[in-house]
Length: 70
Image 1 (cartoon, one colour):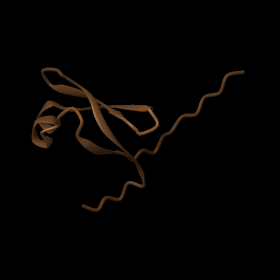
Image 2 (cartoon, rainbow, N blue to C red):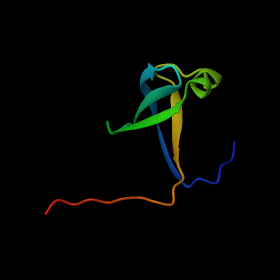
Image 3 (cartoon, one colour):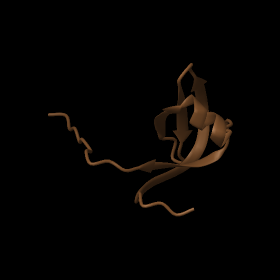
């Protein structure tokens, strides 16, 4: 599979919370940091996501915000 998104984080599915329409997927990287993705329930079924699955979180966005204290 090839994709145009350059921002990619590899990790494992840590948590899956299924709703009626959306699914919340928590992906944990090797360093312990987590990324949370909201995808459709249908997509989560199609991907057959399970706890412990190795996945890639892809980011393609025109807006990225940075914050700093002080």
